[in-house]
Image 1 (cartoon, rainbow, N blue to C red):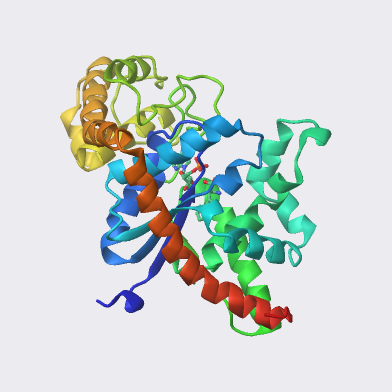
Image 2: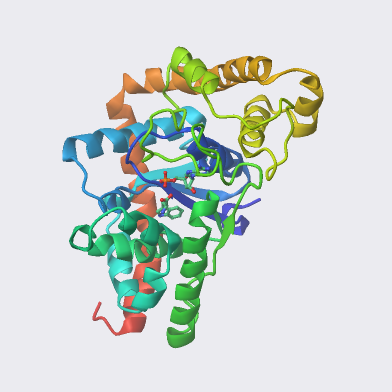
Length: 334
Ligand code: AMP
Ligand code: TRP
């Protein structure tokens, strides 16, 4: 199929904290699959990361790390555009414009804002944290995106993006395509290893909450060994009754490419101990190719920067068309 006839896919990951298997299974694994069938753009959203204070040296390091993890996971710059958000100024420009049209109440209602702001005092909440979803809307709308592969926590932001786009189109005429979130049911919400009630998160307090993509095999084994389980001893996928084991079974299934029902059969009559031991090896092996590729990429940061600059150039060209149309419609003198 010709590129123009393919669906456009856009997604982004923040370069804050350590990427973990929740990010991988919920987002990156889908990116790799989608790059073959669609016209895909994958962004490292550094302007989103600074909505909470960042150490500049670490931000720079993490931005390159996310780029290398994209590449190490199998995103191919020949198939998809990989770029850094701040290298394409149209994102901040459209973000500002959308801010001027988005009611405060809609932003205050966002679950992620409520969660993140609950952690600070009112004086500590930055305006950018509230306005974060309008920047995300800009990211998506600039490329006339059809599909946004994300984890479940981002569904609400994509829905808001759709209503921002609709409102703009109604007022100024057809400008933006209406995007839709793309969730993988089995992995849209990978739960914490230390608490199956909460999602696995970069910002979790305990480092036993998640397996980072760059954790050593021993660390992976240790974290899985101490991961919480449920009462009983059966290895069964039953979200309500057995949330912790269901989470581990889903992780096993994704890393081994075995359907859940096969895993239940394999471990029929066996206990949590046996299952966890095997799961650890499945995850260690599953992450090995990515970790090896990462080590190679790390030796050539210039090569990675070159890929990112080329990506930004292409993204800027494409975003430029939309931002020009938007400015014209608003009455800005071009
Ligand atoms: P973030 O770490 O917030 O930048 O998220 C990057 C991507 O990973 C987004 O698409 C998130 O929805 C997804 N994601 C983050 N945490 C999880 C999780 N625990 N389970 C599934 N997807 C996740
Ligand atoms: N808000 C997303 C997250 O925290 C990151 C993000 C920013 C994003 N812009 C995006 C995701 C555009 C998808 C599309 O995970």
